[in-house]
Image (cartoon, rainbow, N blue to C red; front, side, top):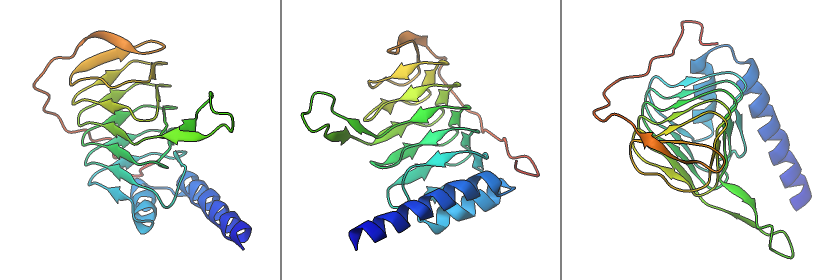
Length: 181
């Protein structure tokens, strides 16, 4: 019986991810996510082709945030994205992985927090348990495997601090096109 329930769950997850590709507007995609209990803020731009990894775990996206095409949102241990966050194409945010030193390849992970006004440029990887402070910037192709303070601009593999960002951020992201594609 458990096998059947698990199989049905993964079929439903696959179906939802396919709908996130074909639904033509931001609004319809957001309605779909809210149906499953995810907390999605106002004026969120949720582009086509975003993949989620769980229908039963936490996903919170704040107001005016932008999730671009091809982003992987691994919400199996809780994923919290603040207000006015920009996540560029093909970023991956992971909350769960495996302990490579475990004799039975045990899973391990923790929630990921992306604070308000953060920017993740293309192909950034955010690993389990990471907390990015207010206004953080992750440069393209970086692997973030530790926490960074507010206003940090980080880059590299693994990511290190490049410099600090200017303070006093006060903007509202608005990438909601009328057709919402």
